[in-house]
Image (cartoon, rainbow, N blue to C red):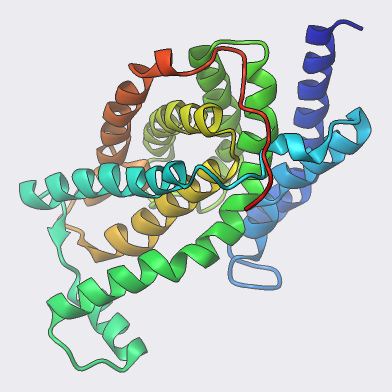
Length: 296
């Protein structure tokens, strides 16, 4: 078997196993109509997000691929900081435009009051927002990473390097965008992974965002040689959009069409960032990812 045929076999095995490991969580999410359920408030979604990791580990065992090829090295740390900051940049930019144009309001007093009550604070709303953002953006990353890591071991740890051995950076990013979008469609269309508006509109916005994110994630994975860039970016993205910016936003009538992952704001901002990274594709070694280094 030649090298390319073996790589294609690795990819086919991985994708097949991902479907197998995700079937039961998909069933529960669709049958109950919610991602929250089972043994914890995030039980179904957590099981679904760890399906790609289980598929990666199993594929490595079956295809005799060393686990260190998944990219466990943390350094160079500068790429982890970049991965953390990029989602803040594009999500904050999108929400600032939304708030300033009245497509959504800033800020939801009920949410701030709930946060203040939860912490036992008697502070001005502005101080509560700042303190909550700082705490969520630091300690909250641990919880967000626990779920994002499951997907990223599979998507950026295993699949991206395999695709990069066959394709250019651009083609690898597009293939990853397709796979990652398809992975989300069952819960987007048949469960409650949306804001409650038009599911087809939400799917279109979400797809644009995912494809754009993959250009950033693929660039970081190839440049750094680390799957942790994907885990950090994914966790930061989920945290700031789902736990901070969206809850702070007041619905002014058609706000759902502009906010979160299912409105036009974040996808458009992400496309701008994706174009920036795509223009830096010449910095990447085509078809090659830096060799794994020790975990430090």
